Length: 121
Image (cartoon, rainbow, N blue to C red; front, top):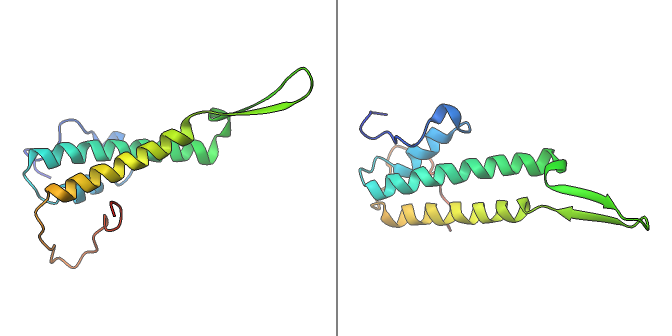
């Protein structure tokens, strides 16, 4: 990626694997600043989704608390991480949809599958 098109706001070394690939797929060679800004935000949201998924999948203590009251009744308190994960996924779909609406409709012609196909549908 050349320096002119690289987003200053993203350090791909600090992000999830494949973040740079996602950014490049979203931008698709566009020079549109609007598309680049939306792509940066989409990558950030996708990274939050990845982190939330790891929390939900492997670290129940961070999103669920089991307490027992005086009478021995158990209460399960679920933190907002599940709702936040759903919210971030919806935000990601919306950003991808916005990018697709702004991007010129040109077939890639390079034989590659569109990795975004079906996300915003």
